[in-house]
Image (cartoon, rainbow, N blue to C red; front, top):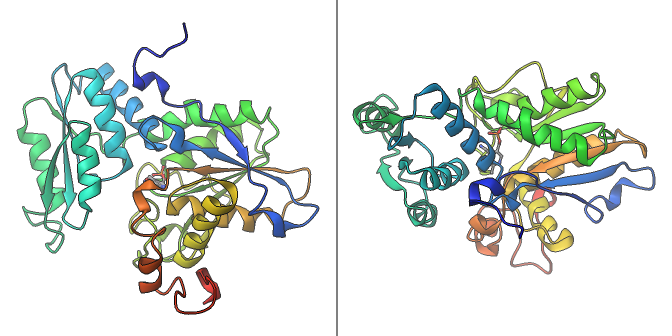
Length: 333
Ligand code: PMP
C-alpha cells in the first residue's frame, strides 16, 4: 500500500511544468521555461516547507517543548503551514493578524484549529495594541510559547537549501541555467539560489523579482498590491550575496500575467506567481535555446478570487477596462 503517515509527510517533492503559451512571444530561440508548482503542497503553498523545518529545529533545540504554543504574526501562507504542522504534532497555535486581513483568511486558519487575534492596523508598531507588540507579548506570556519569526529564522532559507534546491537540480538533471523567484522574506531565493550556485559551480544565474517600490530593487517600501513579496526593510533571512539581478515588476503586469497563467496554462495561482513569471520572461529574453529557466510559483489562486480574478476589483484599481470592447489589463491601460 502506498500512503503517507501524515499530511506533513506530503510536503515538498513538487513537480515542474513547462510554460508553453505565455512564453510564445519569446520566439524560436527561446529557452525552456519550467514552473515549479508549490501550490501542490498540502497547505497550498511553498510556506509548508519552512513551517515543518522551523518546527523540527525548535523541537531539536528544545525551544518548542511537547504541548507548547506557536505564536506568529501572520495571516497568510506561513500561518497555514504552521497550523497544519502544529495540529499534527500536538501544539497549540496562535496567530496575530492586522485588522485589514480578510475574514476568509482568518477562517482558513481557524479551520485548521488555530486561534486568531485581530489587532488594529492604524496604530504605531510600538503601541501595545499593535500586532507586533501583541505577538511578542503572547509569545512571552503564554506558557511554552515559541515564536518562529520567519524573517530571521535560519531554518527558513535552510529548508530551501535542503529540499527545494536539490529537487530543482535533480528534476532538471543539472541542466537548469537560470532560477527566478519572487522575494518576500528572502528565504526562498537565498536557500535555493545558494544550493544551485554550489551544485553548478556558479553557472546558474539567480534572478529575484519584487514589486516596484520594494527595497530589493532600490525602492523605499512604497505600497503595492501584490501579496507575499517585497519589503520595506532588509530581513535577516535574505542573503544579499545570492541574486545576480533583481527585476522590479508593476502590480498591473503581475496581475495581467496571473490571469494569463490561469486562462492559458491552466495554472490558477496567486499574484506573486504572475509577478515571478513576468520577471522570468524578462530574464528569458536575454537567454538562448540551450538555457533552462526555472521559475517558482509560491501559491494557488483560490485566495485571490475576490481580487485578481474579480473583474470589478481589477477595474476599481484601473487594471481592467470593463466598459470598453475587450479586456485590457496591465500596463496596456
Ligand atoms: N509569494 C507568496 C504568496 C508568499 O506568501 C511568499 C512568502 N512571503 C513569497 C512569495 C516569497 O517567499 P520568501 O518569503 O521565501 O521570499
